[in-house]
Length: 120
Image: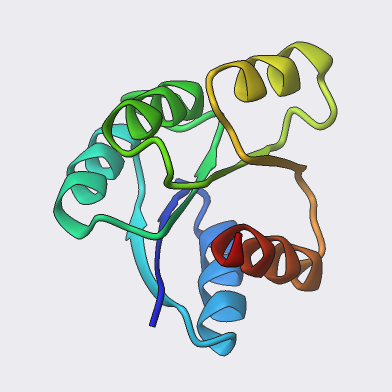
């Protein structure tokens, strides 16, 4: 079973992500802020990270940078309520994001992208 770390402070979004990905058979660890996300990244060694851009105590861009320094082959999918803000998308990819999804998103599309990232 593949392990996914979800770093999201919005309980509605995190609940939706967890429900949909568990339905696909993934083991999910939740962190509700950036510092907790970094601790859990180090302790769980996930197969994939999903992080929001705007989270407390370290932003999603910092999470991507940290994850890529520690484990360069670990894919990171970035979520953002900032929509298709070009600067945010570009910055996420510049620091190593594997994929980017604006909020709101369709749970089936998220599951598809996660499976694609984990299988590559």
